[in-house]
Length: 420
Picture 1 (cartoon, rainbow, N blue to C red):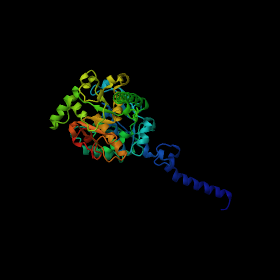
Picture 2 (cartoon, rainbow, N blue to C red):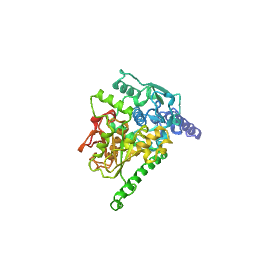
Picture 3 (cartoon, rainbow, N blue to C red):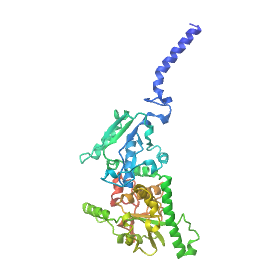
Picture 4 (cartoon, helix red, strand yellow):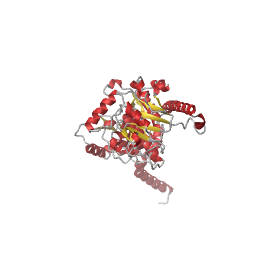
């Protein structure tokens, strides 16, 4: 009993028993696949599950909404969203015109995960260890596929047996057309994590610098002694006006007004100019950057008839048209969006997705700084809606209502303008 051989044999038996009982639970310690537990939180099985979504298409802002909706779906399913493909071209039914572009060619991948850490996560396809462990989720469609049915389906796919698959691949319509189950503040959080890649951001820098240079030259010409004291190129203010007056928009908004029985969606050039000129407290002279569709760049009437001290410029008159034209549609839109987002004063249309997303982000910026007041020129990122009449026949002050329970209210409703 006390012999050395017996003690060695007993030790070996005990060691084998411990190995049998404990090794399966910690088999992933060295990266062994198909484990259920892990000592390394970065290798946790829950974080090795993914959601794959269809190609994201249409305009920049529709794609941003679709991306956010895909992220929030992945969050509900407790999965990492596999980096989706965006569309560099603008098309609707002509699929052959699709030009795919990787998400990380437009937005910073690592910065997104750094900012949204703990909320959602974006992954690469190279992270998927088993490409065959996939379940295809067919999204419902049609009038009978209600919001409640869609939500119930998502809840079911967050549980067994579907949660055992490494990847759930959603097939069917693109995420912009999915039902919405999330409040405005969740979308705002996703948008806050989207940072343009340096190449695109530098292009926006060029446009903003050009606007500010013209503004400084004009102020120095009008009152050189008064404005030279504190003015710098970085602080020179400008106004961005998103003008929706192109023919296809006017046709669409007129139909929308008839369907909704309202009269505050469409705005003429004359109404926009009049209301912007009546913004209370706006210091002049000031450059007005007009964000307009390319087919309006030959229409000189959009540059005429503005109030005294309002200096209208669009990309052609500004001399930056080539900066835009060397890029595909999606990048051009991203540059314009950034120029409007950075403006000291923004004026848009509450029924435009482009305008609505800018106001949502500007409202989020104000909230992050703890601003109690969100409208008027006394706040840092004031926004206005020219399709709604406000003080002194000017545009109405506009801030997104983060308490809205769905994003649709933010995107398509003049009744949800909030300045509280």
